[in-house]
Length: 236
Image (cartoon, rainbow, N blue to C red; front, side, top):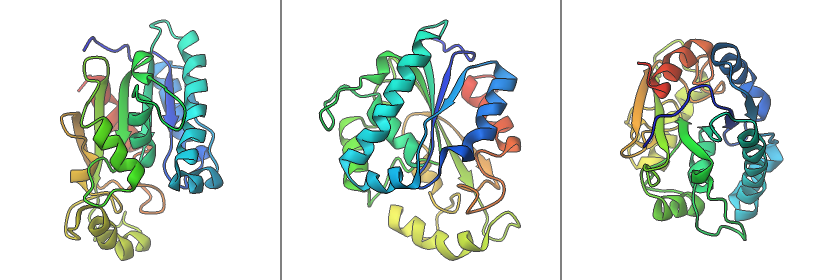
């Protein structure tokens, strides 16, 4: 895997039921601190509800592809960096692939040479059929000869002031539904063991919630971006 230019354009795909404005601070931080062109994939709650089916994945991945092509045309390296939060990170692994999906072939590994995932449920005992398909077709860092994979997990104590009441009530069931073990460490939704993609470079962030519903400080909070971005870029 060749080195990746930290200044090349960046695409952000969010997580389930989280609309694109939630990532405005992340996009602004990268633009202001790295000087990169950053685009967030537009998505509504309706778009995410449709992702229970392949057509929903295709709707969002078609948008990803259109934005990647635009960013690639403006990239001095000819490449694009991908960031996926939660379900978005799993979907971007599929986007990298060259197998036909719902009538499309994306082959994103040819245009995108870095994938950063934030709290994405990569490994799961009980995965949805589409997520299982990703792990079957593209296990671990499948395109590691072309793509630098970096996965970030959060470790949130439910006793922490950062943990929301919602996280305290739902975390154990979430961990059980993903891993069969309600006692694992995680970000309030996704266990650390699931969020760290096998064979990827990775970082576990302390006192970090999955999203704003689970705690005020999450992967998209400025103080956490300042932790994971340097590691993802290879600075730390």
